[in-house]
Length: 186
Image 1 (cartoon, helix red, strand yellow):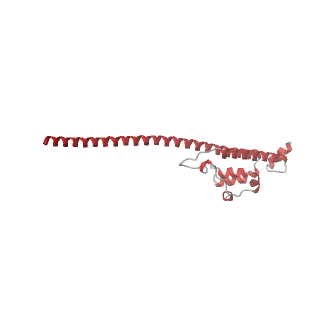
Image 2 (cartoon, rainbow, N blue to C red):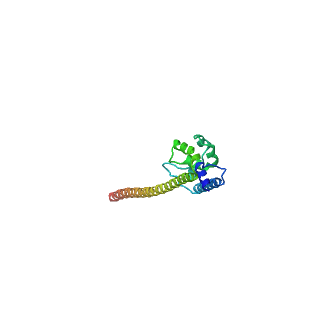
Image 3 (spheres, rainbow, N blue to C red):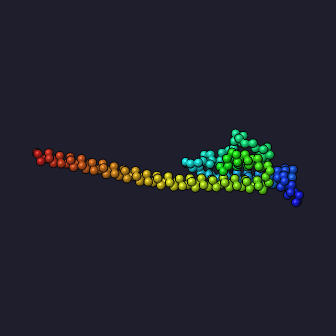
């Protein structure tokens, strides 16, 4: 058992060991479950400002063109396609950092890979939460401005009605005075 741990630390991606296969399956299942949970959650996309996803809150699919920008080792492509997706879609890395992580994954331990995955998923969740809060704040501001605009329109209509009434009263008074003069002249 101690020998397995030592082998595991020196060669973390050895698929010949049953333990590594089980760990890989656990990592893959964990990543898939997290991805499914995140993709099934509706995330708000702000009306203005930076967008972290596709319309409707769904994260964009990583395309072959996205992957082609990087030198992703075959072992990483085979074992961790979900991790590739997380790395490519993260907003906290530039392309140079993404490339670094793709090259580091084959020499990382399973524990380190899980930590990287958890960090990326946590970041994704936090950004989705921030986007949601931002969307709610925008909605509140929009509602406030809509209410102010409606109050402004009502005030303008009242003023317009008051002006029209004053003009009609003035016109009626003038007509009334004209009729009185005509009656007096008779």
